[in-house]
Image (tube, rainbow, N blue to C red; front, side, top):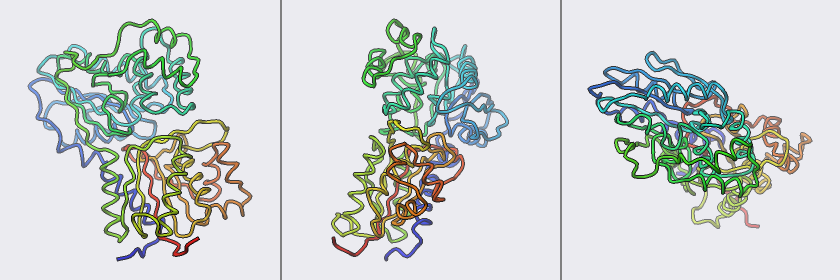
Length: 428
């Protein structure tokens, strides 16, 4: 059975399937433990934190209280768990105050008590409790530099953990000897619990030396308090084998791979062969676009291992080294570079989006392209190459009316990319 649908609708359907597979309301309840003999405290952070908290409230039988922090605009009303909103990706005082309250909530617990920690993408910025002798302003400054330089999320979080009083296993250490059960939605390549949300409830394998190496690698001159902390502090994060974390259990309830597999299943139903290129793809967004454009062009001409109609699916987290002054997240940048590389290739359409609904700091989840994208842009007086050079993909897609706006999805399994190849039927 061949493909007979409308490309944009088909690609949106695949995204919706991926989001459904990462919905905490469906994935969390079956994993809940039985209530303890003591208290149950729910704490957490991330873009999915409010929906995860609501899922627990809807299914928990017993005593329950707590606090979670999520990004502005991502809250849901809860009755027993307080939901606070704060800034992302650069932290603010609301996140700092919420993190301090969360740390206070887990103090003085006993072996009869249970802490349920809810961690999802964005938790690193939202749990913004600076380590001793580091100010919030200094954390904000170093965060901005790390986000602009092209560092990977693992590198960024290695620095964050060593500037924090709550991340890198410190939350779990503070909650000991209570039992800790963490439910996480992965937004990082490789699904490493120590990287997801900077691992507040798991041992941290990175060190102060690792954090210093990241700043050296990218030529970042840190604020004075940050430099002093990274060079002189001796209070390392809890490491594997730390007895304070021995009663901590960790469960991934949603991952990028699960989302891609759900989209692949829907593609198959529509008569389109799915090809999952990977769920942990990293690198500069525009360079990843060049590679995937080459694969799509080969597929369009019947020179790929899978003939059209097919859809190339991928996840992970690309990066953007910001050199221009424009507007645009990594998914918009990926798509503009992809459209330029495809150069109007017949029968190729694509969607790329951040599954949390926000691409970077703009109002869109991502965007969509087709064979006519570059031609339409030039007709409107837009120079796509110049927009890409200025990191201004958002402006280009906004002018074309091709931004993908979903609003907050209340989950986050990182980037979702789908390239639909229907084939041109022509050989060059």
